[in-house]
Image 1 (spheres, rainbow over the protein chains, first blue to last red):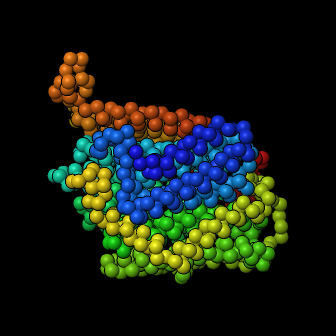
Image 2: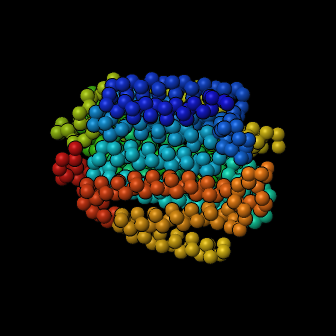
Image 3: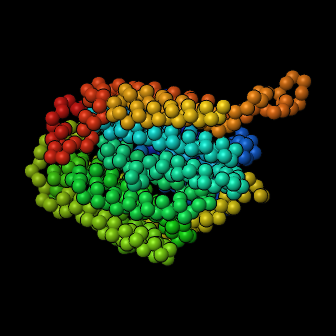
Length: 501
Length: 132
């Protein structure tokens, strides 16, 4: 038994069970979540360190040998994703201490948060396709619960639409899984890689690949399947929308990367060509959509779509540099995105609104906050030397090397337009003189003590990580390259799972 | 037999998509149920239909009698049914609460998260009373 591989998944579920048992005492739940979050973070970082030293780690659950049992496997990509998940989980747990009041805690905020994190980690470590489906469901259930956790009208509205489209995606996923099992007779991902080689009817497999692409495309928010995202992500409390924004679409991207580097690589001209087109349109529509909004969180939500385009662009190009760019982009973006949502919560706690027209003057009155917004926002836009610059530069260079000039141009232009969105927020919320203070809007944050220390600490920590990623990208780029190397040489993964083949 | 099942799955999927696209959340639930069952049938058919022996080893033998039926799809379906049922109950409750809160079953009329142009979300918020 390799406990290090199991703990990132088991620990959150243990915490969820304990929090459920402690329903009445909110204080203990908070402390437990804080301590548990730190422990989880420590374990996940240890896992990342071990894997970057010793390569892929596997564990056969119940000692059933692969491909018959369920295999847990973590390569560089999984380990990076798990480490980021734990980081975000900890940050949001700390932030929630200030934002999530007794009413939301009584409704089960902490158990749901733990289950969400456990489900996401499970999806990252599993080496079995059906198991991946189960983790997707676990994660979705928790996200459904979190999304409607304040029972406001707009939450129900967003929630209904989110649930509808995501359930449909799940059904597509499992039917694709059924087809794939019917063709290959296996569900172990490493074994799938081997079995797919021997399938004579590649056209049928390509159709199955398209089913998976649509299913994961909906989860990831790819063009033209992203419309559920801008409807729902701005509706729940800030801590919840931050963790959803940081994690959920990225699990879709991860699943796309996993399946389209390991299993569906036989008809690259079609599948990856399609992904390339989808990626370019995703980048463009996402960033153009942002121009239409005047609400802090809605701008950030629609930008998630645009950023997903970059991640998929790297997958579609399928070169070592491009995939490393994708992995680094994931790492950078998950942290930055969650951080921006958290900053929007702090701005709201000062200004009383998410509407940009009602905010203003923070540059003069709250210089520290302006700095905390500046780092993630301009990292998102790709300003050197922040982390987003390296990620975008890698992807644009990879596009040029692959002679995908249209994609390179789109990536560069979208980067510029992202600057426009971020300067819009900057100009409205920070530079513009503060509008006459109106009454506080009704809602979750209404009672929050403005600029609470627990809100600022995680934002500052995530901004520090962004700065480190930007100023000392070396070791992180090495990890991303190692991940890309593994993705491009599936034999390594297969050998780790199935033994000497 | 596979052909019949294939047509049945197709029919169920078509009906479920029609129901899901109707824009009415009650019909969506019925569509969801149909679709879940269609998918279960797909997995079942993907595991090959055969009149084989059950995958059980008899009392006095060491191996099961050939040919053995494939037990894996059934295990998958069982899991999918359990998960599907849990999701369905959640969807029922969510949609019921949404109906209570929003007063409509028509998704086109739910415009709280994305207020129509000209009506800012702030104005929308002021309109509603007691949003907690």
